Length: 180
Image (tube, rainbow, N blue to C red; front, side, top):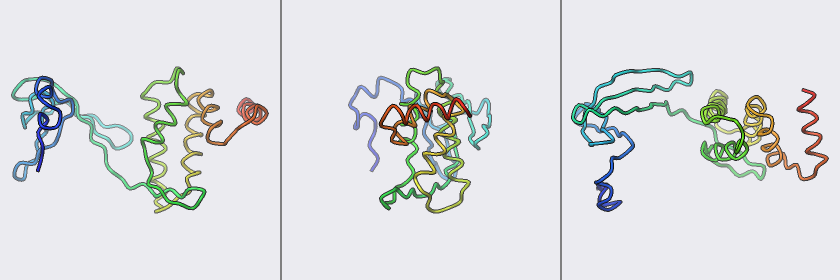
């Protein structure tokens, strides 16, 4: 049973547009539902591809004429992460994103650069074609991306990831960064 937005969120949901376009399967045809009026059909105005295999489509609703964008991204398998204690955990893109965003807080790093770094880490994990990898690999890939992106964000991430708990170890990491 599928609940309507008004059943889930009350009558206030009817007064504002839904800001996510959704796919609707009618017969054998897949339609893109308008996030403004919920009409099941729209036309594609423009299509562009990114370097990670994603497709961005600019659409226009036939009924209300509103324009909206959709983004299609292939879902590829990422390996299980083997933690230091031997436990296994699914790769969590959002967990990685939180850590990178925190290290980039109040730095001149754009959201697009952060997303690109996260996407690069995820793509490199997928290219390994292994069912399990050490969680250290994810941390090392994130460190590499941050080192190229912003040195302060790199040091912030390193403090937590490498467990740098005294000023001397932080200074050593900064010295390595300045030498390299």
